[in-house]
Amino acid sequence: MADEEEIDDDAVAAEWAAMAGGDLDDDDPLAAVADDIAADDGIEADDMGQNERVLDQTEIDSLLGFDGADDDGQSRSGIQALINSGLVAYERLPMLDIIFDRFVRMMSTSLRNFTSDNIEISTDNMTSIRFGDYLNSIPLPAMLAVFRAEEWDNYGLMTIDSNLIYSVVDALLGGRRGTAPMRIEGRPYTTIEQTLVERMIALILKDLSAAFEPLSPVTFTLDRLETNPRFASIAQATNAALLVKMRADMEERGGRLEMILPYATIEPVRELLLQRFMGEKFGRDSIWENHLANELWHTEVPVDAVLDEQTMSLGEVMGLEVGQTLLLNTAPDADVHLRCSGIAMMTGKMGRVGKYVAVKIESMDEPEE
Image (cartoon, rainbow, N blue to C red; front, side, top):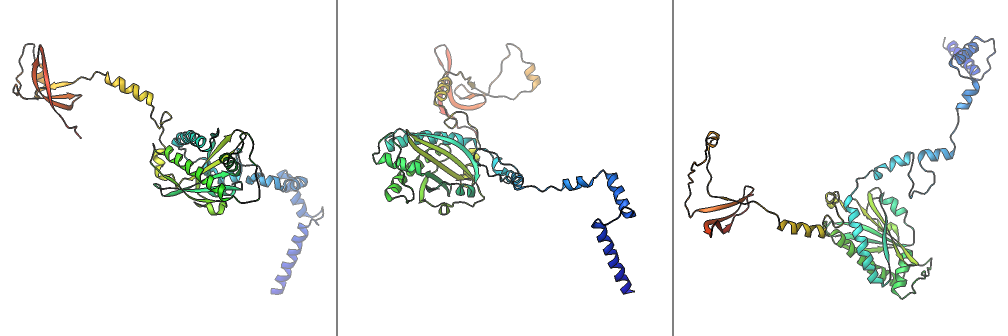
């Protein structure tokens, strides 16, 4: 029986293989049934072959979001957009716009005095980016300044490209104005260039500390200078960071300056950065302050002189008539309390000055908690 079952299994397998290979005749009932099923479903043999289309490499790259286009200024699509969507939707910090606007104005003045040249600083944009993606996108050669926020106990990174480095060095060493500095590629920065750039970075960090001072006092100090991005890692590659791109123009020369602050660095002042202030001086406008102060001095404020207080029922109050006398439990030389809107302000003695009843102030009352 076992042999017969094995023979039967082999025969069945051979029969199905013949059916799959298309060796069925037109008179075969199984083939007729298969044709009827295909006709009922509306599927033709040619259509079944056309539906099995394979995507080419271009369509696969477009689906995944790796289309090879430049990421600057263009939105990503596909799976890559889902991966980076968290950075785009990160919370906005309104106060940072005011801080860096003030920082740019202060830095423009400081660098003009430092280089004795006409230099203009402008902010290109302010975006959120992963720290690892930024390190991979730094154009070399460049100088990377790692600075420390003392009060926040964390670090930030500043990148100065070679164009700005050569422009500043050329201006400090007496280069002719209006001419582009000569660039010598393929060599490391000299000690003189690093020293001059280090002085400029210290000046920039001083202005950055002054820009944050009205919001939260913080001291930024230079920790080290690096020329290799691998040695300037101050946060994990997947951590979110704030990237501020700035441009320095010195007539025919200039360059770019980028500053990146990990969100972990500005976390101690995140609540302050979320506030919305009107005006460009952190909610303070000297013109309106002076105008408000002058108007307050001319404001009329009613002040009540309280001789005595009594508790009466509503019926007694409603029963008061014109000419009725109220007896006060106070002596002529008793203290009189001066109140404004129910708040005790001063204490004095009652008297008379000419035809007026007056109160002589003797002490100031402590404000109630």
